[in-house]
Amino acid sequence: MNILKVKDRMELDRRVPSMPWYIEKFINYKLPDLSPSSLLEYVRDYEAFLGWLIAEGLAAGPALSDVKLEELEKLHMDSIDGYRMFLASKPLHANSRTTVSRKLSSLRSLFHYLSQIAEDEDFYPLLKRNVMAKVAIKRTHKPKDTAAKLEGKLLQEEELDEFLRFVKSEYGQDPALSKQALHAFEKNSTRDCCIVSLILHSGLRVSEVVNLNVDDLDLKKKLVYAYRKGSNDDTFKTPVYFRQQAVEDLQAYLQLRDIRYAAPRKEKALFLAVANGKKEGSRMTKRAIQEMVLKYAKRFGKPYLSVHKLRHSFATDYYLRNDLYKTQEQLGHASPDTTQIYAHLTDKTMQEAIDRERDREG
Image (tube, rainbow, N blue to C red):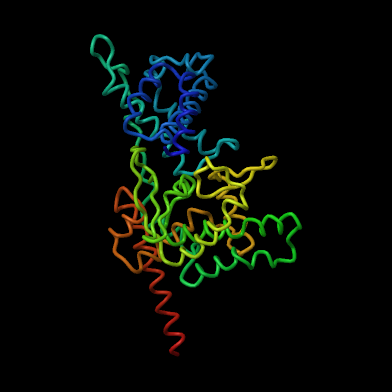
């Protein structure tokens, strides 16, 4: 069972009862098709929207669960425009255009269900008027635009090996490190290098790395069995291959995993950490891996280098040696449209490589 999905399902079950009955009905309708993580994002979006309606006097409340269908039917476009402005401009709630579009898309999905799918006892739609049907949501993830934002922020060619060397040893040579930071590095550098190496040589997502168990690893075949994002089938793990370069780093970590992290027999997680005040290691969290990568990235001189950009770095490098559909399969993309960003990125990368070769010849 996917550990993150289990946690998100528990959180979903905790939050849904505070929603109006019709939102609970919508969540149950979507449950077979969407992951608990996606549905939890829906619920958070609805909490923010209903709270705004009450604060603006557009719904009586006082609780979120008290917001009535009739109050949703009476909303004008001015109200939706006001909510869009609230999301984009309020200091405590400022969101990027992508996030605003996503939150509005969540509302559109709910309103569509209530007006087109759900019925009352007399077979009439639950929502008689759908104001969100008038809301145009621009596509914000065009591959070319995404590639432009990533340009210059990824590791390329020899930088992949340079960053790995930095994580493995060079970070610890920084005289500015505190004794505590140096101690943490000496204890965790092999593990940290292994995680970075695995992502840079497989393109796994951080959530997929977090959920890996020791039994999911096959060093001979150079693959791991992972729960891929977007798949709701918790009974099937997808084989994801990694390059030969990651094998040595994985072997080095496995040799010390049990002893250094005091792994209890029942702990199946591949990557462990010992929390403060604890004696035994437990599964690393998504946040811990993200913060670990940022720590090294800042000292390496690339503070924008997140875990996800490590995945992008692998994908760009992989695409240069393979075609679109092999890259799509390796990364676990549902659509080749998502993978298209690497076509745009590699155009630039190839041009830079040609220019460097000309400089050498000159």
